[in-house]
Length: 264
Image (cartoon, rainbow, N blue to C red; front, side, top):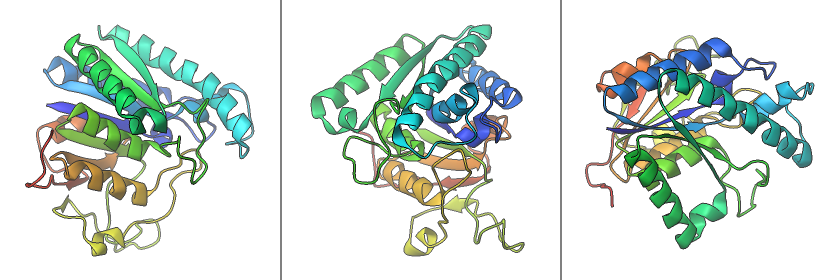
């Protein structure tokens, strides 16, 4: 299979913004093994701003755009250095692709992204993709931004014609209610269609270092299931669950591909 895995800031970094070494090393080991098994893997990785916050010893996630961009520029270097070092340990070559909204909206540039992705996979490389936060913005209504990496990962899955998108988050999946507030909340293992009732279950933003919430994950699910790609939301604290997910076993919440959808 061709699998796109999105990992959030909450998985990659401690609350301080500093790298969560154990989580990142476990993730890289599992992704390397899945690739060794014959699957093609694309990683969409958050964490540039969060890691930049730690690297620059800032008190927390900045609120002003110039400091966010500066933190992203510093953090992206640290992020790719870490991935390159760890994946090399398992004999895998990584490649960095930084995108913004214009790369997706412009047909010629979008084709270039697809061509590059396809060739990297043919060459056996593992593409690592993030939004180019050092030059982009995440202000609402700015047309050159993608926004957050749940949406970016869905766009990448579309461009790569992926079979499966996995969102590694700080929650086990989609619940019938907010599990942090309602002890009776139950995990929904399978979603066959994104109905208004399912959309009503989406909450607000996630952790302090990240930007995504369940609403953005449902948006991603809608984008990929329409083109014949399954999507799974699961907890990034347990990257070994990717083995079971790749085998189609019940982990987290799986959004089933629309049977009428299909890759172009």
